[in-house]
Every structure is written in C-alpha cells, then in structure tokens.
Length: 92
Ligand SMILES: [Zn+2]
Image 1 (cartoon, rainbow, N blue to C red):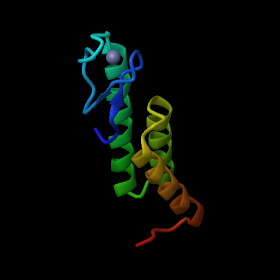
Image 2 (image 1 turned 90 degrees about the vertical axis):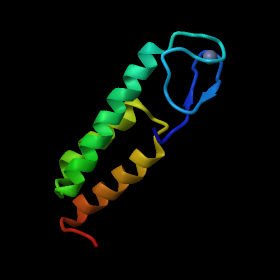
Image 3 (image 1 turned 60 degrees about the vertical axis):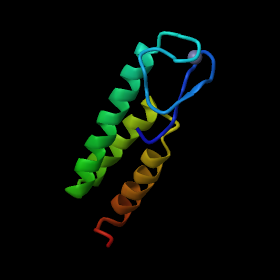
Image 4 (image 1 turned 90 degrees about the horizontal axis):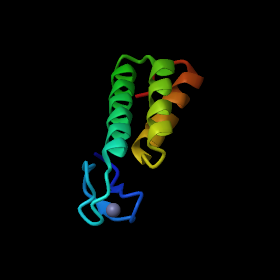
C-alpha cells in the first residue's frame, strides 16, 4: 500500500492495513475492506490508463480516491488521465 494507514480510533500509523490496530487493538476490519476496494479500483485505473482508455481510468481513480481520499498517487494519476482526456491524444 502506498499510503500509511492511520488507525481512525487512536491515530496510530501502521505500515499497512491490519485487521486490528496493534496499538489500541481496535477492530479495523471495515477499514481494511475499504482500502482493499480502493486498491482494486486503483489497479483497475492503471490497467485502463495502459490501454489509453482515459475516461474509464479517470472513473476508476475517482472511485479509488472516494474510498481512500489520502491516496496521493491516485490523485496524481487522476490529474494525469484527465489531462490526457482533455487533449484527446497520447502524451509521451
Ligand atoms: Zn488504534
């Protein structure tokens, strides 16, 4: 995972999503599921971008960001695919 996961209960920073916070032992199962979903959408966006399907890629990155708003990499890629979309041709 690209973004450090922060426990919503005690703000403990974890290297990666875990089902239970190592600090406060809070149940993070739902959080892990959301991040998993965000990662799937992110990867979907990368696949579409490779095929130069910019609109589909933007939708996938938008969904990833909605699920995980702290994902800076998804933000950057969303900006990139939107720029490609606007210009209507491949860059680079
Ligand atoms: Zn915690």
